[in-house]
Length: 77
Image 1 (cartoon, rainbow, N blue to C red):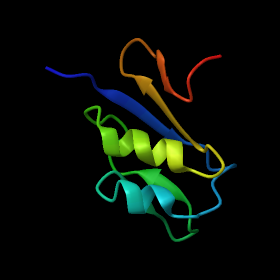
Image 2: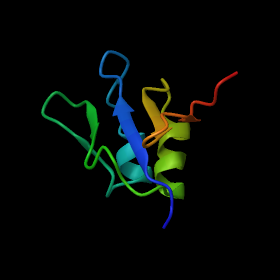
Image 3: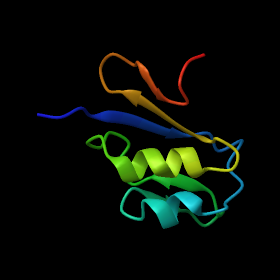
Image 4: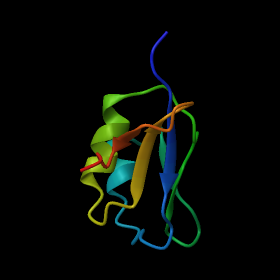
């Protein structure tokens, strides 16, 4: 069984660019306020979700390993 992640979108940072919805349309949606939210906050790990987080122009998306909370994105310095 593969890793599972915990996704969060910092709505105070989200500018509604919709990059995440273009890069991972099954994982992110924009709400009526044009802000992103994860469709499933605890998905299976996936390259498209990681690309969406990396593609966010304001780094509003964070990904951590489910259970341990170890950061996946953004990486710890």
